[in-house]
Length: 250
Image (cartoon, rainbow, N blue to C red; front, top):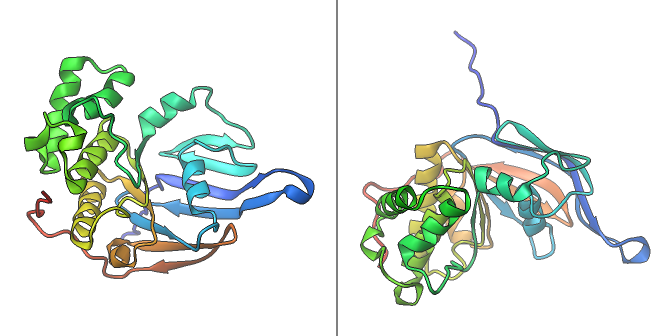
């Protein structure tokens, strides 16, 4: 039989550590963490408060500089004992989409304009940005709310707009920090089903920090952190896939 060739990981980090402070006040937030995430995977970062989950997400997102180790994103080494890219803002715009616990939409822009803003920051012309924003909102079943202001959106609708914004520049790495924390179980499941769909359709890697036990079955793998260390990785042999068509959260 022909040999199966594994796809190159979209996220690869090796021996990454991060400490804050020095001497007696030093805190080791991450200690020698090594992991890789493949295209199409949805993985969870789990652990008690203070275990290093958000710090690890911010290292992968090039928001926090590691103290040691190396980071490779989408085939590009971006950190090896120092940053290898001078413009980290451009790097984040090109490679990474962020989804937060709260949608964090700009309150003075419509749903479509919130999505457009990210593309225009990256240099996309307004007409092209608007066309893509509407396509993304339609893809996420919230196109009918493109002209609504954030205050007029339900929690599920606002999170869909936030996901569209995260996808605006076609990143293949999606970082989600407690994306379902403010949603009820039904809407949380729908959001996770959407992230699974994004990972599958676009061969993206989705990394999700969560405490929500109800969404554990949406992950391909779960990385368990404790005291800044990666202590175990559990495989889900049959992760739940989204139903088709996706239900619409109003």
